[in-house]
Amino acid sequence: MTTGSGPGPGRLGRRDLETRAVSGAMWTMIHVLVSLPLAFVVNVLLARLLGVEGYGRVAYLTLVMEIAGVVVLAGVGDGLVQFGAKAHSRGDRSEVRSLLSRSQGFRLLIGAPVLTLLVLQLGDVPVALLVLAILFGIWIPAGFGGAGAALTIQNDTAPEARLAMAVNIVMQGAVLTAAFLLPKADVVWATRMVVGGLGVIAALALVDRHYRVALLAPRFPTGMPPGFWRFALPIGASGVVSAIALNRSEVVILEALSTAEQVGLYAVAFGLAGHLMAPALALLNPLTPAVSALREVDIDAVQDAFRRTARIGGVLGGFVVAIGGPVLAILVPTLYGDAFASAADLVLALTVVSGFLVLTFPMQAFVTARLQGSSVLMVNLLSAVAATVLALIAIPFFGAWGAVIAKVAVVLTRIVWLAARETESFMVGRLEFLGTFRATVVASVTAVIVHVVAGLANPSGTVQLLAAALTAALCAGGIYVLLLKVVATGLSVGDSATLQRVLPANLQRLSRTTLGLVIR
Image (cartoon, rainbow, N blue to C red; front, side, top):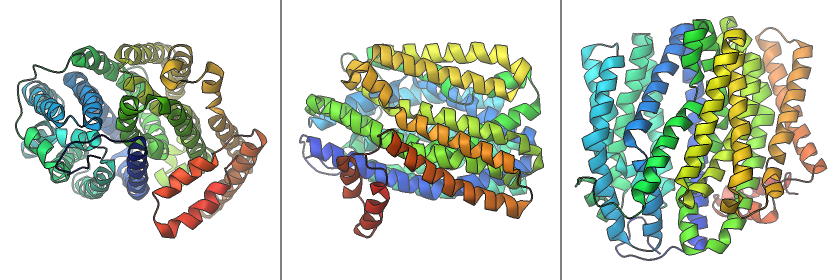
């Protein structure tokens, strides 16, 4: 087996891939569990410091840069991970080195100059901070950004997650300090870019030394493997429309067709739902190279891998929807102030929508593992069109709720496409595929019931709201577990064993008891 720093080539077996994927997932979860509460607190303080309009401005600037980054990279990062993971799994290290060098050349020669021009147009910050944002937010990631991809290719996502955890802690502290010193949306945005670039340099120390040399020797991006651009360009285009369909792109339409208040309310609600679903989203990073490599070394195992991924993602994500949605909805006025109180229902709705949406993300990993770039492009294009059309129609009448309607259209489009066109990627039938959403349906029903009952109770004041949130959490957890039993869905004994295998010994007993509640 090739390790992250091993000197020689070798093939990764099925159990190696599963162990690395689960270990990476575990550390990713730890990273999220540590970073999420910190980010949550920082975002609450930012909303209070910047106000509804300022918070909406940060969301807008962040979205524009995310979309621009996807546009200029043209799918090179996705192609690098897919082709690199396959080559690494079969021990072809020279192929991986070539991919890393040429991808770095693309970032430096094409990506960085275009993004620099965009930041110069958007940034409204002091010159010194603008220079730092361009240096650390664009050129350093362009020069060293392949380190993260190299770790993913090596299936060394566990150390990558540990580093991301440390960088996030530093970033949140820096952002909060900047907001206190100069409470301006553009300053907060630029600070995030600066700190984000520091983690890219640190990641180099974790990369296999053979791959590290390749990263530090960028080459002109020609001579890619056969099929690379045929996969990367549709995936790159897909990334653009995906950013429009899946991110909070509705803030752009809200800003044009509605009020600044509606932009801020939607940004807060979308951000809270995103925080809740971050653990499930984070699992995609270690899963993607593992699935790609699995198709290379043991294609017969893909069906079992999909079933296990869907069960674990659905059941664990269901806990987040069932408990997190109603609890955060209750706490919105306490956390953000009365100005954001009307975002409570939006939080619940977007959490439910996100529960379905996030479950489709690991499914997409199975599609990209077959190098079906055109299929990924098509589903994201259809989702973006559906979201944009409905947003343009609904937002002028319903404001932020029109944006929620647009997100519902995205979820329906993705599920219908995957069921109709991509069951071959999962190696299961259509009915079985649709059945993978049962836990999410159960969680959504639970969340709505608890939210409605909490609304009828109408708690007021900090003490009552905190008591109501605690009661809602306990009731939601109990109802969710009970309904899982009723519809006969949940984890298998094998799923539980897989999760426990990578946990520290002192946590295995507790996890065995907890997971036992949702074993079908």
